[in-house]
Length: 167
Image (tube, rainbow, N blue to C red; front, side, top):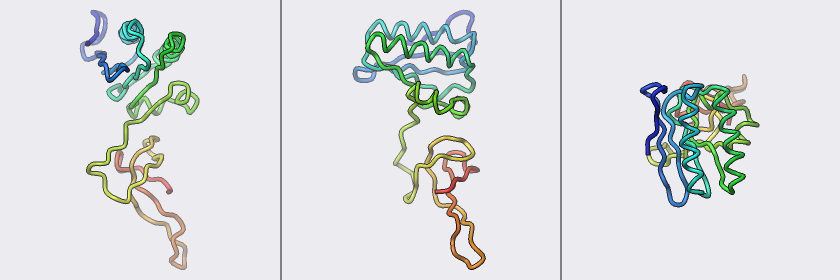
C-alpha cells in the first residue's frame, strides 16, 4: 500500500509491506511538517492490524525534521501500548547524522544488514569517522614510527571511500 495526500510533495510517498508477521513501512522523501501526517496515517493503519513489530525504513529519506523525530518517538510509545515494537531501520546518511546515541537507543535503530556478496575478504565493520555509520572497512594506510614499526593501522570505509577509522 502506498500513501500520499494532496498537500504532500509529489516525490514523497510511504508504502507498507507485510514481511512474515511484521510490517515494514518504507518512507521516500523529506520527513517534515508537510509529510509527517502521511507517515502517521500509515502507522495508524499498521497498528490496526496489531503486528508484533513495525520497521520504519528511512533509507530514502534525505532530510528529517525534529518534528519527525518527535513523531517517531510518540509512535514507538503508541506501538508499545499495543504490545507492538516499532523500530527504525536503515537510516540514510543524513538521518543517521541527526540521531544522538540516546535517540538511536530509544528508536532501536538498525543499520542495513551487512552485505557479504562482493565484499572483499579482510573487511571489518567499524564506525566510520567521516560518515559516522557502522560500515564495512578494508585495511588502508598505516602511520609508522621513525623506526618503521606500525603505530596506527587505518581502515578505509567502503561506503563513503573518503572516511577512515582506526581499527
